[in-house]
Image (tube, rainbow, N blue to C red):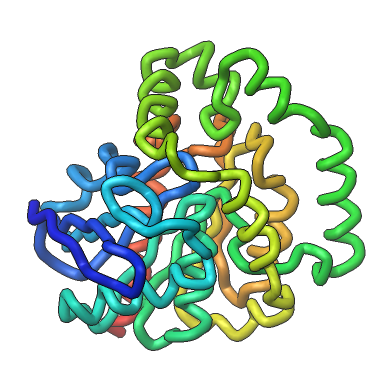
Length: 273
């Protein structure tokens, strides 16, 4: 494992490189940083070069008032710095903004894209009417759920089931989240919402293999939204993980790793043909 920094305009990006083989880049969510992938890097490092990083503004990276509009550029600069021409991108929640934006800008640099519990930069209002109706119905049915969990001391991105069945894991998630206690996440959430400008129809332009993953009990990113996005991408795969909340990679790591591993293997095999 090599930990280092990439100096960017008004930011310093911390990253680590572990393993050897085809490149995998992991992009964390709003509640994490490079450490979020502690259950994934050891799983893949024997076969892949695993690149983890903390988005600008997320410790131990630096950068005041981070803007998601800068995330894809940071990723491109990091890959250039590491001499990585192509990589598979594995995104969680906020990381989907980074990875989908990058994949749309630099499609030839992405040999596979895994989008977990995220809609990325897609504007949900541009979904087909029937899909949009399902998303709106889901949001109405779950209104207030996040606020309720916060009041009860449970991180919504971890979820009630994780807190009940795996309390140590939920505690670890909250501890990782606290490493960014100085970051104004409410301001960043607004920027993430404002950055959702990509028409859903443009997902049809994606030519690389794409996998969407969602937890059946996710109350942060509607599972019907993830299903609708998967249907827009030609040949995309979809995995709805039962008994899992927003952070499938964290809560159900064994299932997540197995599903993504098969997707990566099939993607590599397709490149070889």
